[in-house]
Length: 67
Image 1 (cartoon, rainbow, N blue to C red):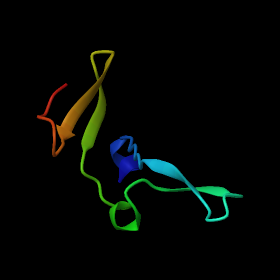
Image 2 (cartoon, rainbow, N blue to C red):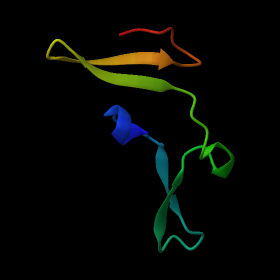
Image 3 (cartoon, rainbow, N blue to C red):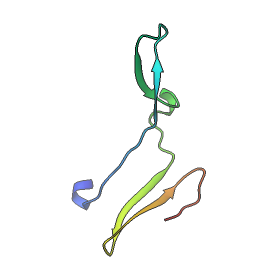
Image 4 (cartoon, rainbow, N blue to C red):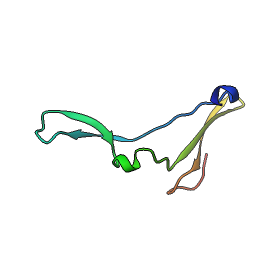
């Protein structure tokens, strides 16, 4: 669908560094845990208009829509 419509999709998942119990190794893990790992709560639309790039906040639980 993205190719057909010539669109772009950008996904961002915040991660944090977790350190093992012994403190010898670290790894990246979803910042809010596995339950929230697949939840998308904000949507930003990236687009061009007359040669100008825009980022529009389309959906957010804590902010109103804005460009």
